[in-house]
Amino acid sequence: MKVKIEYDSSLNSDEIHLKISPDCANKDNILKILSNEVSSVTARVGEKIYFLNLNDIESFYSLEQSVFALSNNTEYKIKEKLYEIESMFENKNFMRISKSTIINIKMIDYLSPTFNRTLMFKMKSGKTLYSSRSFNTKIKERIGV
Image 1 (cartoon, helix red, strand yellow):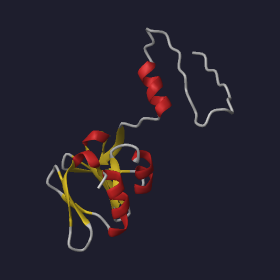
Image 2: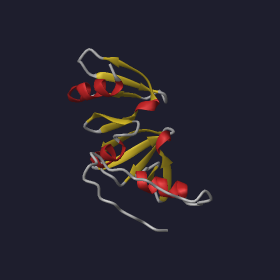
Image 3: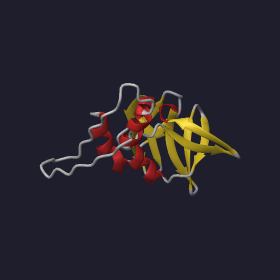
């Protein structure tokens, strides 16, 4: 494979043009690498290692110096810090709702304001999560309320 880089000072943002043969077997892998698309998270339960699909993860949360992913009502320990998860998936369907919790927007059943100006998130799994007031403005912007 031949790689060619051209510098163009007239561009406002970077562009990638990819020329491949019609029978290129690696095109999906090339696109995934170029877009830096992460579709799974490596997690542990005891000594077992799992690869969790992002679409199946309901939330990430920190508890006692550890970070966990909740998927299909099972808690998995992950090595990344919560701020790393937030930056990795901020352009995906995840948003931070408190200092200790990031949720998958697609897993929200409904949300409701509470008496103390926080937001209650009822997840499709039945779990109830609450936002911190300091995150409410960002949450409302993100979900369009």
